[in-house]
Length: 112
Length: 115
Image (tube, rainbow over all chains, first blue to last red; front, side, top):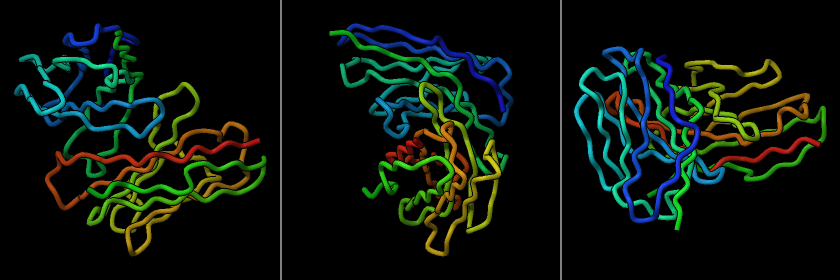
Protein backbone atom coordinates (compact mmCIF):
# COMPACT_ATOMS: atom_id res chain seq x y z
CA UNK A 1 0.00 0.00 0.00
CA UNK A 2 1.19 3.50 -0.79
CA UNK A 3 2.44 5.60 2.07
CA UNK A 4 0.81 8.95 2.68
CA UNK A 5 2.32 12.00 4.32
CA UNK A 6 0.24 14.74 5.91
CA UNK A 7 1.15 17.74 8.06
CA UNK A 8 0.52 16.88 11.71
CA UNK A 9 -1.63 19.91 12.44
CA UNK A 10 -3.29 22.94 10.87
CA UNK A 11 -5.42 25.84 12.04
CA UNK A 12 -8.20 27.48 10.07
CA UNK A 13 -10.43 30.44 10.83
CA UNK A 14 -14.13 29.72 10.99
CA UNK A 15 -15.86 30.50 7.70
CA UNK A 16 -12.67 30.26 5.70
CA UNK A 17 -11.65 27.44 3.39
CA UNK A 18 -9.54 24.70 4.93
CA UNK A 19 -7.04 23.15 2.53
CA UNK A 20 -5.55 19.90 3.77
CA UNK A 21 -2.66 18.49 1.71
CA UNK A 22 -1.61 14.88 1.34
CA UNK A 23 1.46 13.49 -0.35
CA UNK A 24 1.23 10.03 -1.90
CA UNK A 25 4.19 10.02 -4.24
CA UNK A 26 4.34 6.22 -4.55
CA UNK A 27 0.71 5.80 -5.55
CA UNK A 28 0.08 3.29 -8.31
CA UNK A 29 -2.42 3.35 -11.13
CA UNK A 30 -5.05 1.19 -9.46
CA UNK A 31 -5.09 3.04 -6.16
CA UNK A 32 -7.77 5.49 -5.11
CA UNK A 33 -7.39 8.32 -2.61
CA UNK A 34 -9.88 8.32 0.26
CA UNK A 35 -10.40 10.94 2.93
CA UNK A 36 -11.89 10.26 6.33
CA UNK A 37 -12.10 12.33 9.47
CA UNK A 38 -12.32 11.41 13.12
CA UNK A 39 -14.01 13.76 15.52
CA UNK A 40 -12.87 13.28 19.10
CA UNK A 41 -12.53 9.48 19.29
CA UNK A 42 -15.71 8.82 17.31
CA UNK A 43 -15.63 6.32 14.47
CA UNK A 44 -13.89 7.62 11.34
CA UNK A 45 -16.34 9.31 8.98
CA UNK A 46 -16.09 9.04 5.22
CA UNK A 47 -15.68 12.34 3.39
CA UNK A 48 -14.78 11.78 -0.25
CA UNK A 49 -12.67 9.69 -2.61
CA UNK A 50 -11.19 9.98 -6.09
CA UNK A 51 -8.88 8.45 -8.67
CA UNK A 52 -7.57 11.23 -10.90
CA UNK A 53 -10.37 13.65 -11.55
CA UNK A 54 -11.34 16.34 -9.09
CA UNK A 55 -14.36 15.39 -7.03
CA UNK A 56 -16.92 17.39 -5.08
CA UNK A 57 -19.74 16.41 -2.76
CA UNK A 58 -21.80 18.12 -0.11
CA UNK A 59 -18.99 17.90 2.42
CA UNK A 60 -15.84 18.77 0.52
CA UNK A 61 -13.83 18.93 -2.68
CA UNK A 62 -10.88 16.75 -3.59
CA UNK A 63 -8.19 18.05 -5.90
CA UNK A 64 -5.73 15.46 -7.22
CA UNK A 65 -2.65 16.60 -9.11
CA UNK A 66 -2.20 15.44 -12.67
CA UNK A 67 0.67 13.12 -11.72
CA UNK A 68 -1.48 11.84 -8.81
CA UNK A 69 1.39 12.18 -6.38
CA UNK A 70 -0.50 14.53 -4.11
CA UNK A 71 -3.99 15.71 -3.32
CA UNK A 72 -5.76 18.42 -1.36
CA UNK A 73 -8.99 18.15 0.58
CA UNK A 74 -10.89 21.41 0.63
CA UNK A 75 -13.56 22.26 3.18
CA UNK A 76 -15.02 25.38 1.56
CA UNK A 77 -16.42 27.07 4.67
CA UNK A 78 -14.97 25.52 7.79
CA UNK A 79 -17.07 25.49 10.96
CA UNK A 80 -16.14 24.68 14.53
CA UNK A 81 -17.69 21.23 14.02
CA UNK A 82 -15.07 20.49 11.38
CA UNK A 83 -12.38 20.33 14.07
CA UNK A 84 -11.10 16.76 13.73
CA UNK A 85 -8.23 14.57 12.62
CA UNK A 86 -8.31 14.16 8.83
CA UNK A 87 -6.87 11.02 7.29
CA UNK A 88 -5.77 10.60 3.70
CA UNK A 89 -5.77 6.91 2.74
CA UNK A 90 -4.58 5.30 -0.46
CA UNK A 91 -6.27 2.02 -1.19
CA UNK A 92 -5.91 -0.38 -4.12
CA UNK A 93 -9.05 -1.62 -5.78
CA UNK A 94 -7.72 -5.03 -6.68
CA UNK A 95 -6.47 -6.27 -3.33
CA UNK A 96 -9.70 -8.03 -2.59
CA UNK A 97 -9.96 -7.02 1.03
CA UNK A 98 -9.97 -3.25 0.70
CA UNK A 99 -8.57 -2.70 4.18
CA UNK A 100 -7.46 0.79 5.16
CA UNK A 101 -3.95 1.63 6.27
CA UNK A 102 -4.20 4.83 8.30
CA UNK A 103 -1.29 7.25 8.45
CA UNK A 104 -0.79 9.88 11.10
CA UNK A 105 -3.40 12.31 9.76
CA UNK A 106 -3.74 16.08 10.13
CA UNK A 107 -5.29 17.52 13.26
CA UNK A 108 -7.38 20.45 12.02
CA UNK A 109 -8.45 23.03 14.52
CA UNK A 110 -11.07 25.52 13.38
CA UNK A 111 -10.79 28.75 15.32
CA UNK A 112 -13.69 31.06 16.16
CA UNK B 1 -30.14 5.21 7.67
CA UNK B 2 -28.98 2.27 9.74
CA UNK B 3 -25.38 2.41 10.89
CA UNK B 4 -22.85 -0.02 12.25
CA UNK B 5 -23.65 -1.04 15.81
CA UNK B 6 -21.01 -2.01 18.33
CA UNK B 7 -21.51 -3.37 21.79
CA UNK B 8 -20.66 -2.77 24.45
CA UNK B 9 -19.65 0.86 24.06
CA UNK B 10 -17.47 0.74 27.15
CA UNK B 11 -15.84 -2.23 28.82
CA UNK B 12 -13.59 -2.45 31.85
CA UNK B 13 -11.64 -5.62 32.49
CA UNK B 14 -8.83 -6.78 34.74
CA UNK B 15 -5.51 -8.10 33.45
CA UNK B 16 -5.64 -11.73 32.30
CA UNK B 17 -9.43 -11.62 31.86
CA UNK B 18 -11.23 -12.17 28.58
CA UNK B 19 -13.43 -9.81 26.60
CA UNK B 20 -15.83 -10.16 23.71
CA UNK B 21 -16.67 -7.25 21.45
CA UNK B 22 -19.59 -7.42 19.06
CA UNK B 23 -20.22 -5.72 15.75
CA UNK B 24 -23.46 -5.59 13.79
CA UNK B 25 -22.85 -4.34 10.24
CA UNK B 26 -25.13 -2.20 8.17
CA UNK B 27 -27.92 -4.38 6.71
CA UNK B 28 -26.83 -6.08 3.46
CA UNK B 29 -23.14 -5.48 4.21
CA UNK B 30 -21.25 -8.76 3.98
CA UNK B 31 -17.76 -7.62 4.96
CA UNK B 32 -16.55 -6.60 8.40
CA UNK B 33 -13.25 -5.02 9.43
CA UNK B 34 -11.79 -4.58 12.92
CA UNK B 35 -9.41 -1.77 13.84
CA UNK B 36 -7.61 -0.96 17.07
CA UNK B 37 -6.76 2.59 18.12
CA UNK B 38 -4.49 3.00 21.13
CA UNK B 39 -4.35 6.24 23.12
CA UNK B 40 -2.95 9.01 20.95
CA UNK B 41 -2.45 6.64 18.04
CA UNK B 42 -4.04 6.12 14.67
CA UNK B 43 -6.37 3.22 13.85
CA UNK B 44 -4.57 -0.01 13.00
CA UNK B 45 -6.15 -2.78 10.96
CA UNK B 46 -6.58 -6.05 12.85
CA UNK B 47 -8.63 -8.47 10.78
CA UNK B 48 -11.43 -8.67 8.25
CA UNK B 49 -14.12 -11.14 7.24
CA UNK B 50 -16.07 -11.64 4.04
CA UNK B 51 -18.96 -14.06 3.86
CA UNK B 52 -17.99 -15.60 7.20
CA UNK B 53 -14.43 -16.32 6.08
CA UNK B 54 -11.34 -14.48 7.24
CA UNK B 55 -10.26 -12.36 4.31
CA UNK B 56 -7.23 -10.50 5.66
CA UNK B 57 -5.16 -10.26 8.79
CA UNK B 58 -3.15 -7.39 10.16
CA UNK B 59 -1.27 -6.92 13.41
CA UNK B 60 -3.67 -8.94 15.53
CA UNK B 61 -2.14 -10.66 18.58
CA UNK B 62 -2.44 -14.42 18.82
CA UNK B 63 -4.46 -13.87 22.02
CA UNK B 64 -7.21 -12.36 19.89
CA UNK B 65 -9.57 -14.25 17.65
CA UNK B 66 -12.58 -13.23 15.66
CA UNK B 67 -15.33 -14.70 13.58
CA UNK B 68 -18.26 -13.67 11.44
CA UNK B 69 -21.60 -15.37 11.81
CA UNK B 70 -24.33 -16.31 9.34
CA UNK B 71 -26.19 -13.05 10.00
CA UNK B 72 -22.91 -11.23 9.19
CA UNK B 73 -22.37 -9.89 12.69
CA UNK B 74 -18.86 -10.35 14.00
CA UNK B 75 -17.27 -10.90 17.40
CA UNK B 76 -13.73 -10.11 18.49
CA UNK B 77 -12.60 -12.33 21.33
CA UNK B 78 -9.67 -11.17 23.43
CA UNK B 79 -8.05 -13.39 26.02
CA UNK B 80 -5.31 -12.92 28.63
CA UNK B 81 -5.87 -9.20 28.49
CA UNK B 82 -2.87 -6.94 28.99
CA UNK B 83 -2.68 -3.30 29.98
CA UNK B 84 -1.56 -2.49 26.43
CA UNK B 85 -4.85 -3.79 25.04
CA UNK B 86 -6.59 -0.72 26.40
CA UNK B 87 -7.80 1.03 23.29
CA UNK B 88 -10.73 1.96 21.12
CA UNK B 89 -11.86 -0.89 18.92
CA UNK B 90 -13.69 0.06 15.76
CA UNK B 91 -15.68 -2.15 13.50
CA UNK B 92 -16.40 -1.13 9.92
CA UNK B 93 -18.64 -2.74 7.35
CA UNK B 94 -18.82 -2.74 3.58
CA UNK B 95 -20.97 -4.25 0.86
CA UNK B 96 -18.56 -6.33 -1.17
CA UNK B 97 -21.20 -6.87 -3.83
CA UNK B 98 -20.97 -3.21 -4.77
CA UNK B 99 -18.28 -1.58 -6.89
CA UNK B 100 -14.70 -1.79 -5.58
CA UNK B 101 -14.79 1.91 -4.74
CA UNK B 102 -17.52 1.38 -2.14
CA UNK B 103 -16.38 2.73 1.18
CA UNK B 104 -16.21 1.30 4.67
CA UNK B 105 -18.60 2.65 7.26
CA UNK B 106 -17.33 2.75 10.81
CA UNK B 107 -19.18 2.10 14.03
CA UNK B 108 -18.91 4.26 17.14
CA UNK B 109 -16.32 2.00 18.71
CA UNK B 110 -15.89 0.08 21.94
CA UNK B 111 -13.61 1.62 24.52
CA UNK B 112 -11.79 -1.17 26.35
CA UNK B 113 -9.96 -0.35 29.56
CA UNK B 114 -7.76 -3.01 31.12
CA UNK B 115 -6.86 -2.41 34.77
